[in-house]
Length: 111
Length: 113
Image (cartoon, rainbow over the protein chains, first blue to last red):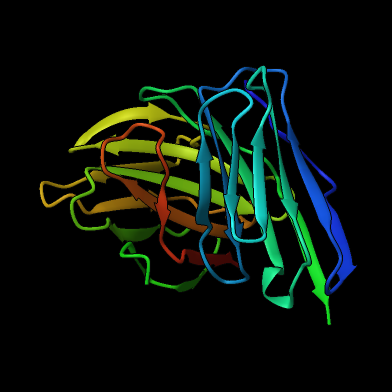
């Protein structure tokens, strides 16, 4: 079973601060995705990374896929209250195979 | 609106009962996935269908079953319900069945009392 560990599990920060959350595994993934989920809603895809060492930016969010394709990080610059939510990473190995989700990082941005 | 429709949004039922959750995938998506989300276990993959055929199975209990119909909508049947089955059940869809990003519905919150 492929496991994805996310850290920290909970994070509470002030608006304007920077933060980084991590997603780690002992398994190699062909691609990795980050989702944000708000209470009462389904996860929404933020980004997909497929190449080891890849860095993608989405406004204030920077995603990095580890060189060995076993880990990833999400960095948020100048957090805003709208960034509050559960951040999930998910790793896949391609083909018609089940995808593994991490348990998530619950982020609260305080005004 | 993500384009993936799940009904009902909330469901309260008693132990031992059977329920059916329904999912209509985003237009053009051939693959449907079912996930269970609980507070302590996160998102757990249950089952995947692609164009009517079962493609992959996760930690789905024998009391649970699913199918995908010719119009591509899918149903998840949960029977002999137990208190521990209380959770959020999500359906997601994708165009090809490959791992290139899922579109999730807003879920069905099942409460077993």
